[in-house]
Image (cartoon, rainbow, N blue to C red):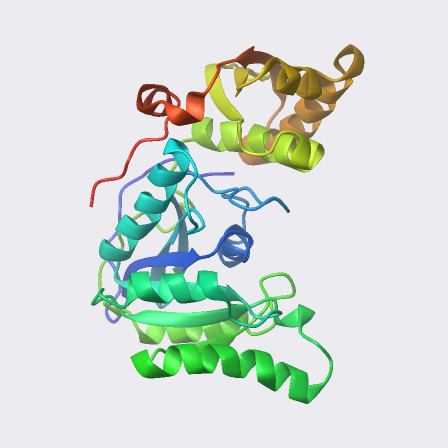
Length: 313
């Protein structure tokens, strides 16, 4: 369960603390890694690229450190106003943190998208660690692994970026990653109460859990033209009642989400409700509506209304 904000205690002597932005191309495992590090689901994951839309903070408090991870949207060439906002927010995150974890897919060689991010990071004075994720998916032959690793070593060498290999899925190498992160942070205070795992309100997480199930169940049929608004949350000792609206851009997408005789919407609601019950540690009644809002991703006004605002530098 996500803890409520409480008093922030005095930090012990020698505590390392700071903000770490997780930067990378879409679908390299940023949200999966943050969830694994935090030990609780605070960011949604999906096989569809560009899942993360908001700058989401996950808080990991260890006996010797408090690391605030900033999960960012995947950096890519934007094709609409929403995409521009997402990429700009990811770039802004680089300027406002103590350390950048540049995450790449270690199961494939470095590509143009990775080199574009190197160009974005180069002018920054923020220290960078290059993290090779998905090592569980690397080939079995040592020479093939070396070729993949070398493509990233060559990318990091001119900037003297430390390189660490791990798998967010199997946790192999995660301890090495945490050790390296702590080495690159300075002594500091607790920024959040030690029992807090995210600074996002439960309403936001609820909306993301619904959107996650839409991405999982509809895949390519309704890619990224979906937004979710949590309209009502009514709490009682027995049950929490949640009313939410799913926004799409076209009538055909509305039909896909509702499904035959409401079957898809029911499946989305059932799966999202189960995740919400884990989130709040209690019973949830979830009611979903679907509304067509043409070209919402192209409108700055609608984007702001749905919660997609440009973060300040």
